[in-house]
Amino acid sequence: MTAKPARPAAGGSIAPIRLGINIDHIATLRNARGARNPDPIRAAKLAVEAGADNITAHLREDRRHIRDDDIARLVAANFAPLNLEMAVTEEMLKIALATRPHACCLVPERRQELTTEGGLDAASQVSTLAPFIAKLRRGGIQVTLFIDPDPAQIEAARKVGADAVELHTGTYCAAASDRSPALDIELARLKIGARDAAQAGLEVHAGHGLDYDNVVPVASIPEIVELNIGHYLVGEALFVGLVRSISRMRALMDGAREALRHSDAEAGVGGTR
Image (cartoon, rainbow, N blue to C red; front, side, top):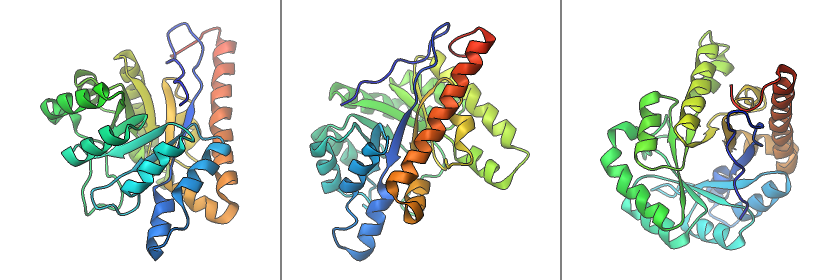
């Protein structure tokens, strides 16, 4: 497993940014025919070859895409650190402790939703989350909470002992797609949330709805050290192939980070703003 780069620190250099590839919808295509192909494990291998730093897979209650065997095979293959997205349930806790992925990202889950809708309401679940997270961490698993960039949710993440937060970028991405006047407001929320989370001692990730057109402003937020992207890149792969799809995203993210370093160097400052 690869080690995490350090968080950006005041007066220090801008940290690299990792790319996590969500392979759920490779499994969706496979399950449409009830056969073995396309194999999400093969997709994970190609994703790493194309520049992904880790693999994300969401094991849902209804197993609509990723299945238990996929998780076991991903852990065994060990192409890259596995980030297991899961609901806060006893069933998922047992599976995580049995398979020991590198990290677990706790997400809200409703059976009828098409995809994860908004962040986890950690602020209302502190008494439930704290012991749940403690069990995962005792098992050697790093824990991330998928939350909205809201001060109360960030404080709750700190309070319950999470290692990191993944800021929900869906509202920002929708505003970017619609060319909404709210775009600047949503980007500002992400920047403030990332700053507050880093100051609270949490590693900062982001994801949901990111694509080639909206990723650069998010990748340019210095406190964010990981982006998790899936559906868009799998869709794009239908036209250009998975390796090219991921490679282009990797290049956009790295270009945004390099521009940020140059900007700080020219301003004579380092680290977060």
